[in-house]
Length: 287
Image (tube, rainbow, N blue to C red; front, side, top):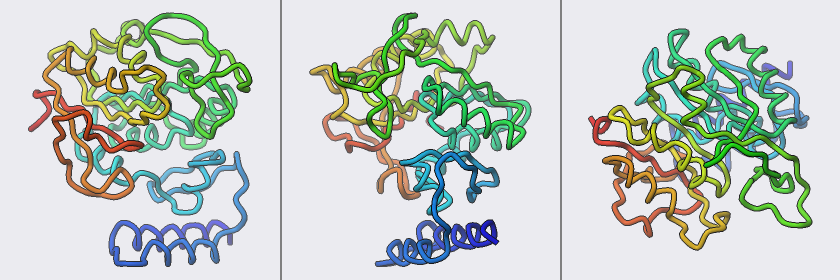
């Protein structure tokens, strides 16, 4: 009965949020969801509207439980650009929503590399992989950075971060690797799309990926821009690294990552919408 009620609620919220929006439709959808859904129990698996189940953690996991979806604008972009046989990198995968979404698009001939360093999150991510029989996803339990090392990661916030560790933070020591070296080990020479959601550690990740970014087949990038979490005084260092490597142009969705809308090009980094995704697209992918 619960599965039926969850799927019914998700169908209604998807319709009211993404297919037939009108003033107040989101509020109505959430009210219906509250009536239909059972109590959320973290770290159990629940269905999504995308044809796969996930073990859901608190935070974004509860939002997926309530609605059945998350960041529909970002996923619509992924659906538009990914094709069977492509390679997708999910850097800072968390519960793996985007990994599983990409997995279904690219098929058995494609590959997903999923990077998640936090041990508890990684355990539930691997359980989701087994649950969905996702043979094209390779889970990797380490973070990415500009050197091979070990670092403490801050576990106190809903989204763990290597960039916000303080003396009183609850931490876990995680391994950090250089992406260019990882791709060589995995025998991957071409990547179509890389999503980066690392809570202020973006510049370090990209500094370890300059070979990939400088390639003639450089990937498209989807980067969560959260300037409040960046410790450097240069909030746009990550994008300057990208621009120095290749002929990248920069875009955001007109209506944010939370709704399906067209991409708008932004040439001035200072005009990026904070706490939203920036899509970095090299000339070879613009068509």
